[in-house]
Length: 113
Length: 117
Image (cartoon, rainbow over all chains, first blue to last red; front, side, top):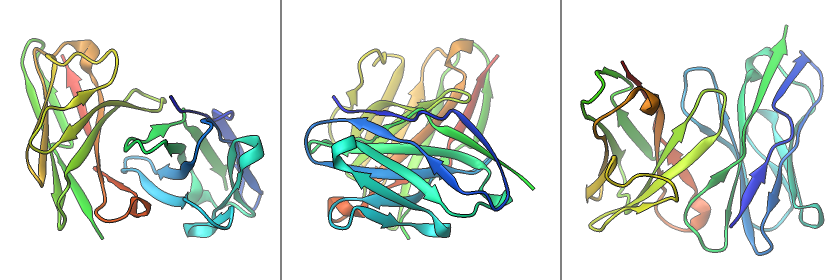
């Protein structure tokens, strides 16, 4: 069964700092990868997704993620964070023809103004 | 875009009672919906996959008789927490696959905060 691991549980940054959140998955076959964001009190929103093609995926709000198959990774990046990026971020994987998403533990991001 | 509406957003119930949570797909038909549970500061744990017109598929460790799932129509799935206890207090989220190709992805409800007292 596939699994997802997010190494950073809580990340604290200042505004304008660069961000990289780690995500590793375990599944040997073809995978589809997602990053979701959950702002305080709100529902999950899709930031970006990878299905095939260019491994560098650009999402909303200036986020991007790179799929590195050899490292089983799909790290999320943003060159300059804003206070409004404070939220919980979840990496998720869909693999092997399964319909269900498997989520990582989540990373809480706090941006100090 | 395709939206999933989840109600209620918050519910407080007494121990031993049952609570029903509804998840409706607006503007699209959802043959498959998913129910997740999220503990504070933790990830979403898949509880079950709800299939329209058939029995739900439960994940290992999830009590079928406690968490009853009904997906009687293409736009509505319900989760009933039966004989709720304080340990069932949690945040429950439904999700639906968007129609079309798998690349269409998923959409999520806004969640239900259940507190059992």
